[in-house]
Image 1 (cartoon, rainbow, N blue to C red):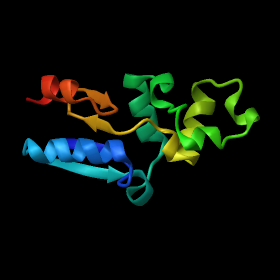
Image 2: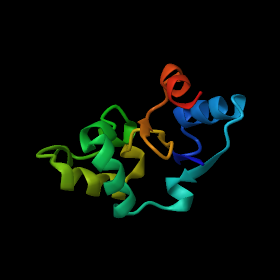
Image 3: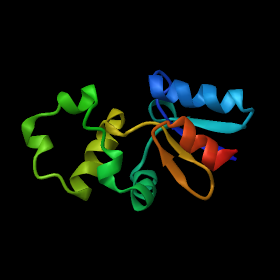
Length: 114
């Protein structure tokens, strides 16, 4: 079963959900805000995706961080920031069971899921 992680009001998450529905692919949606987020889940994502790919530096949440929070980033500091502010995580993350896909890309979804 596919599992889609993100935040329900995110436009990119909405696109991914629409794509999955159009292609009649069943999935479970995990909303970080309502279903929660813990360090174990973040670390499992990070092992496959890398914290640099997961951290969304183009987000409003990133721009709202202090300069001190944005400097001297490493794995530990970045994961802690993402745990405290889930909107810093690039969305969505789709767990196919054998791979994780980050962000929404129509071609990537087609190649991986169809």
